[in-house]
Length: 346
Image (cartoon, rainbow, N blue to C red):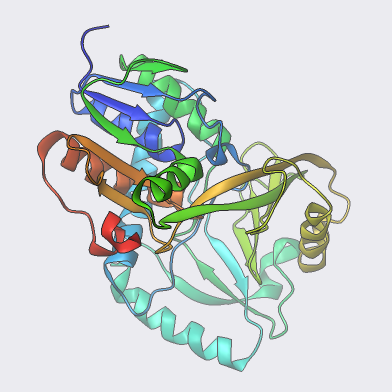
């Protein structure tokens, strides 16, 4: 392959997405990861692309909104180039309304979404009884329905991105020499290494566990119930997740906490009671100290950059992250929100 313009260290969702956009803009790209595409936290099974609430609007929420709106065309293009299926679908989300306080908030957010979401999605209140057996139990009999939420199959999405990159002429390697401008998208290990390098904590890893059930409801909206995601996928499975564990001994091992997730899901959605478990997953997700993604120039390393820390929202914001990082790396054009800058986590 001819000389490389951009080397991406890390083949998770940030690294692959940035590599894809840089390649489409004409850059010669190499992606390096010894674990292969989606070999870390990005190879999970949940895939809930869910928006922030439509209130107290700020640059972070606007960034996520723009990315969720752009996601459909992004994944259609990726899947067309790869010939694979990422499992993307903008199928919406249901949330039970527990009491009058939540109902009042839901009504306020309905009005706010009408303007903030620019008519491209809605946040509304529906009656659970009208939604059939998939509707979650709701003490008030009402649920929130938003049409901005989407789902994706993380492992298949990473495979599709990797194949699209290869088809477009990019170089994917387990080990290779970094050339040109270098982007570090190395997950929680990268955050720990940067913390050691700078002598201050900038982020760490949070373990998550999840389960995949065999249940045919692929066109149904995802459910969000007391912090639990229940996500139907397009291959006849439903993902349940996830835990958030700061302290752990075995980063990629599952335990009885997965059984707790499944029990909570069945209690909220009894139609899952007899669904067999077809997979259990555990992995460590990168969490920056600011809780926001870390994007921008690598401190003290000219010509190098960081894209990390997409804790829980990495797949949802990846299309927009890829665009702003390509702008910065290829054109020197910096449009990164202040909350996402490296300095916010220092």
